[in-house]
Length: 360
Image 1 (cartoon, rainbow, N blue to C red):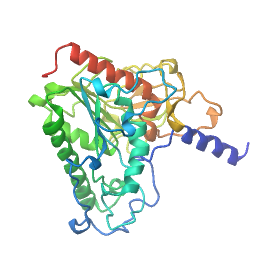
Image 2: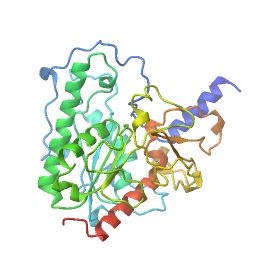
Image 3: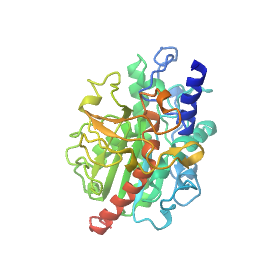
């Protein structure tokens, strides 16, 4: 069997999943080489104005990619109009390429090309998983460039992340003041978005009155220890509310670089069964993978198992599966379990509202 054929199978499967431009833990040979100037406020994009709808990737009172549902999905339609809860979604790193302007460290929320990439990847493939559970709010923010995770210029990287987080917090505070009105809220994020969402939860929710409005936090694609928060517990059953879930997805028997330092101590919740046991969840319990052209690939494509701070998956049930060599499934943390995430978010909102936990 030729190398070209093997690559065709592998690349075909990546495209079949709707390959996302998120690669936090994926090696990139050019990132980390200090060829860019250091961080400077003189070359920082202008701040977003969250009173301007253009500075949101998703808002419930307009049509955008967060409203979409796969045509071949058997699950619920977009239910934002009558939803009793809200979802604040923080997208991952999409700014992964060489900038065409002077903004080397942080993306510009007025950059139409970058915004298109955000909307057509993470908003379509990830934020949509929550539109049956709540009204979706997804801010644009001056995301730190992917190089910030790899560069030797750690001072500049830290400043880039601070700038990005400042935008996320400002967006959430605008949402609270102008849209929340005491409604229950889900915090959902991926990768760099999770990095910022974790800090947001610590600063604004953990042990504060706002915590009473927290339905759940989906902190995906970034290692998060079970004791990361003082008052927000891990959610270790499908209908548990007020807690957080987290997972990072890898091929079975694979240990990523830096595992002992980061991943080993992380919580891992199985996104099929929503518990933390080491029992492998049969792939037949996976209700649907979101794939290429925003289509559900069907049930039973891939299994999942919690293993020492990670979620391991086996070979997908597809033609040519034996040739799929992917080890780090970070780009598909949501896609692989899209229908299960969708149903689980709706379940948690229903449990939260029916329990009378809401402060509304």
